[in-house]
Image (cartoon, rainbow over all chains, first blue to last red):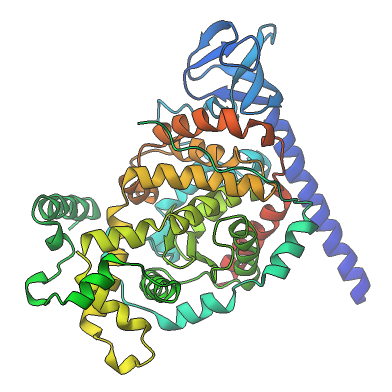
Length: 194
Length: 291
């Protein structure tokens, strides 16, 4: 096969894999789980009427975003709809194994990329990360414990390498523009009252 | 001895040392350090940017001794581009900002004086989009802007040591007192094991979300990160250090949410850029497999 052919094959493979990833993400993004007790508000405002209190574990369908608010409708019928704070709800990773904060249980096995919601948990799901935690010794990846920190010895070569990767501000601006990022003028947040 | 045993032992020692004089927590031999008027002035006064950067570099060098950079230039450049872009929105855009991803499956991120920020591979791979990365880096940039580590060092070392060690920035490097310098570096690194004041963490959160929002990202992404972290089993060794050295995620979420709702909610629809991050995460995983 000539080089162009190989190139084409590689790109096809990559684009198919990527679209599979996207589909997995899009599918999982539909449903979500309440992860901490959330008052379901009629409108996206703290002053709005509370329709009911949603306990952790309730499955919902995600709707629009509005500031820090997220529209949800209660599954399975999706008849009751309202608004919760964005951090009170999490995209569902695996049906039937809710990532409820209160339970703090680990477990669950991710069998492959198709099972993974990238939007929810990065390329490594949370459970995948926890699972891999036990593997660190076998694959020779170092952890970073208090002991490691307290016994650390300087590594000037590594520092030099770090410095070598420093970006020029022109490059950073260009990269930001390529992603469609634009600066906004925003005031600092006020210090909270004590 | 099991690692859990070690952790308990360390915790015990830690509690003991914090109960005694703060100086002993850092193992400083204060008695032997003579306080001169010049040093005191130095210590209580301002640290120049040059000195700040030098201290940060030394502490970071130590941190990299515990966990080196991941061997992937694309990933390092990416994090530097994003990090600098966010840092340019801060009060000190002209610091020589440097960012890195380090070889550790633990979930954590670190800042050092003068503009050094590193994030673990474990945290990098757990993020969902570039906005979350910007939020995490923004938080660390917030520590640098707030001079949290520098102030903690100054406070705990009673400044004698810092005053002395600050001669590191002197042109004449032969004048350096290596012993004192080493103590300063160790004190700096031990801050990562001890943690900062929780109010420094809240401040870094407040600063970080603003920098991310100014940079064009959805500032609520940091809340997503905190929500993810909060759902990780607290027994997991990967997150043990982070949870020990930071206030509870739920508390941080509540505080951030309260203040952001009034001032930042209109920026919640800004960019997330999941694809750019995912591409680099893939590359990092692939380069790991090769090794």
